[in-house]
Length: 224
Image 1 (cartoon, rainbow, N blue to C red):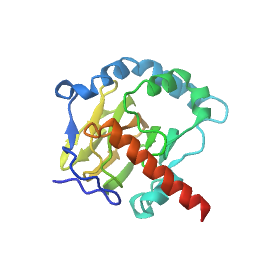
Image 2: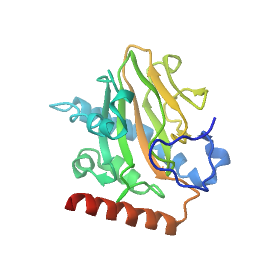
Image 3: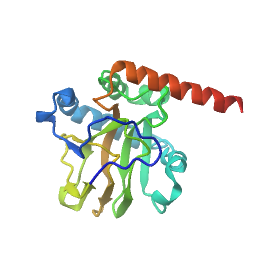
Image 4: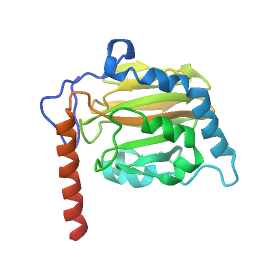
């Protein structure tokens, strides 16, 4: 298996499908996030149970960036975004202040002039399947913090042919430039907090250069 980003490839980055926290010191911060799982899950549930329920899902707009064929029939996948294509959503910080504060303390969080950056509550309804696909770039590493997993045996994900299953409070870290798919064969919702971080091999100077490039591309697009 090899990474196969669909749009933007940055050469020279080490790659592997999965990152284990204990052998990846650059992701040591994830342990602090895991400890906050009950509080983050409580904020999600409070938002879901409030009048009006969850906000409208963001995934449909983002799906157009990746190709609608990847997301066909996925009306049962709901995104409630803190970061959408690099832009912070202030409304989510008001609804989930502790979660937002925890996210802003994440080292190398993908935000600001990064069109491939997303961070959101991901709710996958029972009976749903997200088809195999690769991310549009190899610039990010993705973290899943499982918040609600009713039946770990009924739902899981496969990255580069290896299946792993969510357990509440135990993060999974992977490179989504490798082919991956997700499923929930259970009867109730699986909820995670999904976080995009910059690839650990990118230096701060490279990150700033990439942000400057993406900002210039956006400026030129806005002027067209």
